[in-house]
Image (cartoon, rainbow, N blue to C red; front, side, top):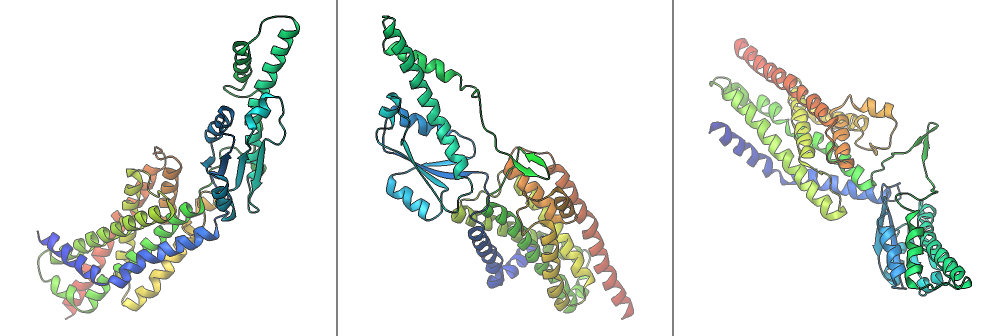
Length: 405
């Protein structure tokens, strides 16, 4: 009960500094917003496009359905005016307008001027998308061409033909496209002479969110760990050492209080970026467990730092330096997914690097556990070493001062 009472008291003290608490949540959100807007043209794993169907026929709807099923495309179905607005605001890469008469022209064997293609000047992928759309149009067109040819030859031979034969030829022709077409085009990104066939490129807002919250958690926790210096300076710890287990209870209660406040910061940030950006940062329970392990790791670093520093001024100078340097090396300020393997290996010398490796892996594949358990091990070994050391340093220092008096 004493422990919980102390935790409650510490949380009240931390909540009383509302300006600092809000800053640690609002500032990361604004940085994420600014970075997300600045990098909005960064290459994405999903390309946004708009389809406008003005024909409203079975063929046009079939085309829309097939394009919507293409991997890597985020397809919106809008009218002409809304599609133009989306394109003007650079929210989509391209607009494909299926013109009225689309189906009739295809049935007549005419493949000209079926779709208007309008692309954004800032588009990187519009030509690639155009190839995808053209391929699906060709698929429908080839079915009609084959059916018309067969029906025409049947008539020349004086044989009976009708809709049943026409549809049968179309189905037979279409079967050559399944499970894969006879010929296809593949696009690879060349990296160091080798084609990257399985590249995954995280949207800027998502990549920024993971890095920013990780960096600010460390900054927030390091400042919160200053309680140890303050209570040592004002003599509170000297009085606690005279009571049995009082120092240990205070030490443990502060760790729990900082951990709870860190969890609240993470949850609030996750909710805000979900509402503002639509970004789901934590895709599974494992993601939250990784962040919890990171919190404990950073708390142990903060407690160790506060145990060896003498004044609050020293901590205020050391905390931003440590948070920024390790954050930069750990990948908090760049797209962690799209970097060379050597730089990713360098980031593993920081807790941020391990955390982002696990979080980004889970964003790519929420069911992936490979590497996550390794991250848990690394992040939890650090507090098992630093927390006892920092407690021993504090207790030994207080006992020495007591003897000297």
